[in-house]
Image (cartoon, rainbow, N blue to C red; front, side):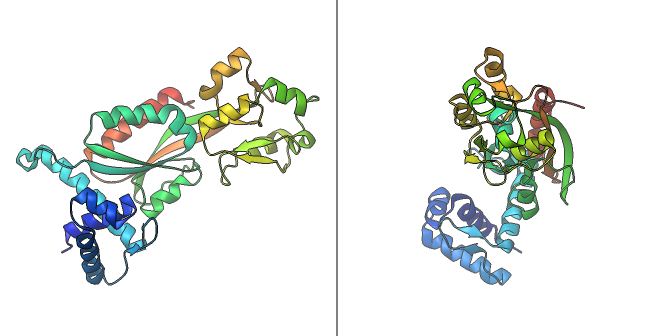
Length: 298
């Protein structure tokens, strides 16, 4: 039988990033946190936390954190059928989720906020490229993820959300300066582009589709969807933007599409751990409903 006070200590250290912050959250001393984790490590026979700044779990530590996350979900559901178990000031249930930055900046955040405002949860949002969020699920770091991959992660259910439409856009002055004769492989290889991070391949995919060949793009790295828009408006570079995020700029002419009717559609999916949980079901309902209103549907 596992010691759940020790599991809660482990989860707090991983979530907070240090023994000291975990101790404050659980209202105990750092030495008590350290002792609980040491006893748990002795019980399972291996290290559970890499004591760095911030602290990170080992593979077994991550598995145990995932286990305690699911236990909390089950206990929350049990309070519905056994009301006497509910007490005033019950702790909220942490729900870690991974999502791509463009979804977070558009349809995802309002749906998440509506759900969290009425549910006893603490949302923990990790941001990564949509082609890599599934790895967060596979590792057990999150319980749900918006993914660009339509293949279901083992142990998870999958629902299509629709497709996010991206527009390759720049300011009129930028287009006049860098694309006076239109978009070509030569002009794209010289004009600065914007990327979210090293994993962001949207600009490369769009350029390959337009030029029918690989183009080595000069890149500014800017890890923020809203900063992308600000930088594009100021003429720093061109980039792929969610249509909904820049629709009013396209309408008033402060941004223009590099190539007419060349939108790139990126299908998105919601994948969530198959746990019998009303909280996860409620989160799924809010996110799927919002996505199907805001994203392009087949």
